Image (cartoon, rainbow, N blue to C red):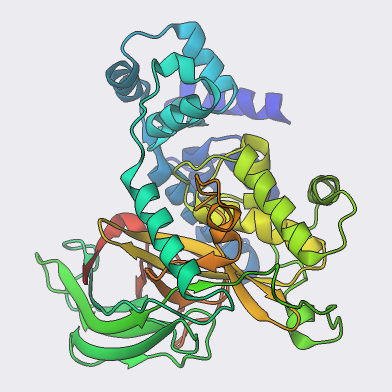
Length: 477
């Protein structure tokens, strides 16, 4: 089939194919999807448009073809750097490098790219990610390592010492009184004049012991709707009309008091799991497409825990393995990764949410209830999106775990393992679940189908992807 398509594409290109010219034969939806998977996005989109416009497919197939077109746009938003741009960035970062080195980086997928319409296009963070990968796997390539300790790591270690000293039983401590201003700005003329833009922005959960005193301050526009705290992903909904030639600003303000937690699990009594309880059943199952008990997951997690029966031991072994084998790198948009844990295992890298999903998948397979939690990290000077998790221990309850904050550099085991059963006081909890339905519901596919931190925007013409708007958070301490 691939040879056949290459032959067809060659004929089309030779004959001066353009998007305005009709196809000379009918292509099945399956054939169009095959063209898309082969990286021939322009041809696949043309064929899909022809099939849809001819009215030869039902509504379900039309929806699938439209999703394919949307996915093409999303992939091209992430993979947009031509070879010349990447070469310039490589030279800036590494000075000289050989073509053999570059070919090796590409072969290992350390310098990530895709072939799209016959062009090699690189991931927008390919070079910065390569630098992180080489620092971990080939440090000699980058020269002498700096002996300077990361100030943020020092801050987290000092803070965790205070948390441990204050409480070991999970009592929330060290409250931080924060004032948040969040803005989401839709690009000029991204939506036609007079059309209503619907916007969902992150709003703090109030059902957690370590997050309280949530108070609304303002919204722009004034009319808004805050979803109930019972939803898995909490939002504040605002809408307004687009004005030709002007950006559309949405803004919210609120105060919140997050707190830290630490559980000394060696001193707390953990009971056997009640496998009939709703908590156990809900949080030990697969959750497609991103929590799947594949054969690779089963084999790896079984080998890591090596027969351990105690859930605390299992969790620590999984945490240590990911800490030692997976490095942090900037992520592709989650919506374009079919199986995130598989991607992480194959490439041995991933951001906070990707590492968390891998941990969750292996832990759930081992019969340990674990749930997603995310929102923002709001440490001074380090305000950013962030994902972590909570592990359920019978007799104790939900215990926070931050996979990507890693084991800390300390000889004290409690300090070293702080993020295995604790969390700092600089978190904004927005989500307690992945892929949770919004209130009010969103009509079109989300830009981020699993997580929710930046926001979501749509209008009557469809979803507005991340490249059509920007966001900014300000934190007052």
